[in-house]
View 1 (cartoon, rainbow, N blue to C red):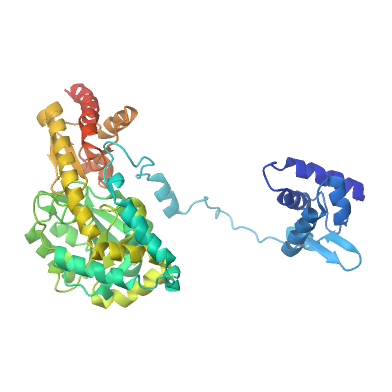
View 2 (cartoon, one colour; view 1 turned 45 degrees about the vertical axis):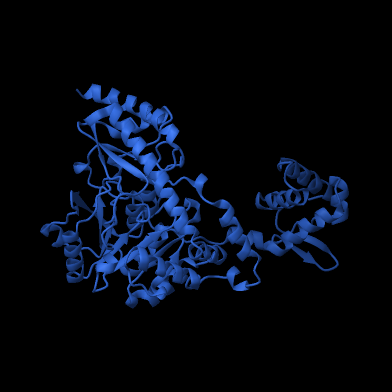
Length: 493
């Protein structure tokens, strides 16, 4: 091909590129596309860089850098004393024989696991507003103190804080062990604390280290959809276990197919708020030991308890070490922190530390160091005490507003701890439709039915978060929601 024709061709390719893209990248893309489109065939000699630059009206260095990048990537080859040519490797690569696909083996773009996750959308892109459950009021977090502590450790000369974290930041593990000793009566060696990036990663680590593909995992039903999705994505067979007024209620028939993992939130079940009774706790621990099951105790909102002290943790009750304790900091600090921790039995420590490092690679040591100081200096406890009072006031305001509008048409559940209240309907109602209509009017809520795995036993209700709603906005939002609910109640009469 004549040099003038090559220049004209490349000019057309350059003009196709977005003008916002840097010129050298546009030239590089133009040459690459021309080669891959076979408009510049293997063995074609390209114009000298100075000539091409003059013809395209740009600096020579722009063309030189484009040529150099394509030479490195193998699209071009330089011949000493002769010039630059389109590489023959492009031709051989495109002509290489392809193996034949066996009949009937074509798969979709997603794996079965990926398709299941993508099809079961449960999280919401809306994360603020009345009455989004599970969200703390981040506007009241002491950002100034936190910023100062993080900046302190980012400025430090301790280079190890910028490296991978194989075991987590030592002083943070000590601080958390001390905190659990005081607040949860747990005798914990700091080495048993494994720092992870959020509760979902903690669950995934437990599933991969303790269970095999196809093993059975019990879930409270209704229960936390996030845990359900993580366990299912890890290849476990998630089995719903019903609740009653005393909490998780597995039957003799349930135990005839014993699980490998049992996920439970005994101190404040999510979303119902039910507290697992002492006799059920002891029975669960006894049977877990008998059937070699591991209990994952999700203590997600223990810090935010309003009326009474909680029962001792399952981890603290377990003499036979069948419990992995899961704690999170996102409910009392801020969700974007994405720091959680596991407390594992001593016999699992080395395996979990190794598994966490191999599968996920820990880091964020500067933030972990800031958190350790935040706890040690009393800021953590002070913030919790302040938020307990504020959240209790908001909880009471929501209860009063719902009672005044709806009376006994809905029945509240929970409220002794956490960031939300569950309201059950006393007559059949399409709670998903109620939630959709409320959202259209600016009020967020989650239908109780979405928390059920066993669709035949699901009950209608709404999960309402009060924590992130200023008290003066609760009554107007509750009035809007109540009007939507009343319309549906009238339809059902």
